[in-house]
Image (cartoon, rainbow over all chains, first blue to last red; front, side, top):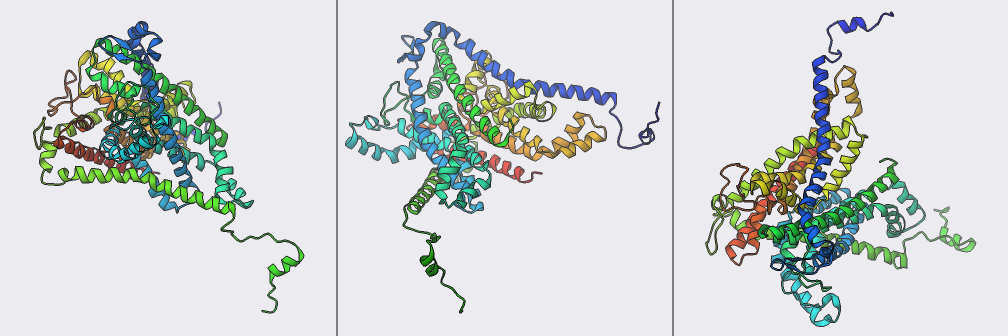
Length: 325
Length: 305
């Protein structure tokens, strides 16, 4: 057997030594716990799906697919349908996405394309991040006492002068779709802006230099080079922002008016799945709770699909630019 | 001076030189300037809501909070009906208690899961699955966390601060996991290699090198998660419910608990001026709590490695 030159050093007292049996044991236990904790997330998602599915099962077998396109929610007659809520959820979120998307992307361009000094951009970025930090109920309160009084004259003017146009078909009697969608747009703006900023940041600087070198103006470079290059990241931002809007609850429960109707008008009260849950759940009886569980499952399904789609697009973007997962 | 040649004059005679001067009234330049002005307008418009919210909070909530009523606001019970005065004491205590419960539950599990995701098995099937699911859960509607906890806990044990805390922890967990994973990944490989080189087990490397080094980043994530949870209201609606009295025990059975966000929600729709004013005061307190944790997150973020 060859002599090990490290043998002597090993036997001398030093800080390097192989782990003892006890340390090996602790190591295995610790790694086991970490493994279990990583598994908890998977278990949590399974538990949520399982529990909601189980609770909704009676309602699912009772109302079946008719629940999706039924238009009445009557506890006394035990007739439940969520089409108005699905419509309200999608309509308000789309309106919010339209507004929040334009603003969010514009702000991402403003922050990344050398419009202002780096330090000022940091200040501005903090302002946008603070928008995300304000709780949903506070936006709801602000919506009731600031936003609705501000937009009511505008809404009434639009209704009296352009009332033939379906979007302005009713007047704003207080809560309604327009204030709800506006607040929703403010709430998703930081999400859209932050993810779009990342998308722009990922573009190598030389791409912009190449465009400038060919004599483009700043905006020609942005519109023809930067935006198309960042497009998949921006798409991810929009889809994830849409996902946020779909699940937003409190501000909508306070502002949308909780009316079970389908209307194109921006000023009519409406309802969303999340605010239906928020407003009906606390006082619901046993039968209604089952129907609400079914509604929760519908909401879960819609947001799950949208979020997974958004994440898939985002992962595709990262892989495209960085060549890794 | 004599060899100073007029380049433009010479150019005109021989061949057409491109004009490199900026043409202010050319179509391209006008389009460029219009778009730049539009972007500035959008950027300024986007900060209007924040300024308006802060103005309203300070103006309508601040009079009560920063005035002579301070002690009453912080300690008294919420007023009923036509009562004047009153405070938001129980709600502040309830919010802090439930956020503390949620933190105690989600942070240990979250950091352990992050250790697995970042170091022990970053490419394993479990890691990729739970990383993906954690990202999906960050976009999970918060009210569904309430529905889930209602079905699991409230149906069996009734409303309690624990039910509320568990619902909040469901929302905090993915944030903590993803932030802690990022922070742990920032620890330089050579530091870990050095520790392995002197014969550390993986556990020792994690405890003695990775966690102390990554701590500021992990704390940033935890603080942001706490800030988010403190402002949540939808998951508390039917897990903690509401109460007009101070939290007397942490009993997990039939113990409805007040919270700032639900107080704001309940009072916002009341026809009494006193309650509406208290809703603004509660909003200001809530925003201040959220802000403190946001500032703490930034503070920890600055001392990053």
